[in-house]
Image (cartoon, rainbow, N blue to C red; front, side, top):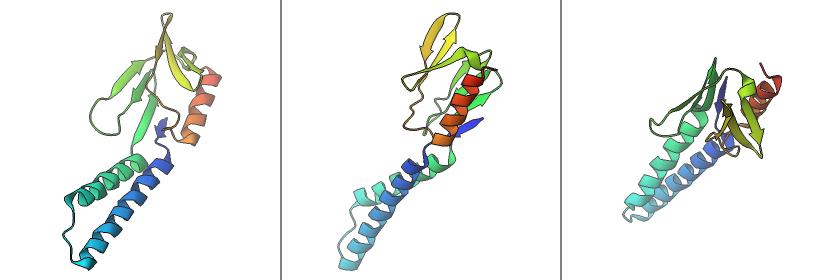
Length: 127
């Protein structure tokens, strides 16, 4: 099961990228020099928007849960036996392993709603 980022964040980033593009056009029309910061903001929000819309945030495979950062290579892997090893408390995902409760770095406000619902149903099913 692959769970992506909330689409609204990607769309918002692309809209901000479009706004900065409009500023570039406005500066171009007036003949003034285009501030490099505006060009940087355009590319930053454009790349973030594309990544938020296309990358998976959490992947659940057989006996391993993978949490991927939006940027970089800091992938975190967590082993589990079944979905019974997971618990959701106050919108936080906990992994219970040998009696130890470990909070996983999954933020509900970043997770796609459909993917979050599927993940919760999988946990409740307790397979």
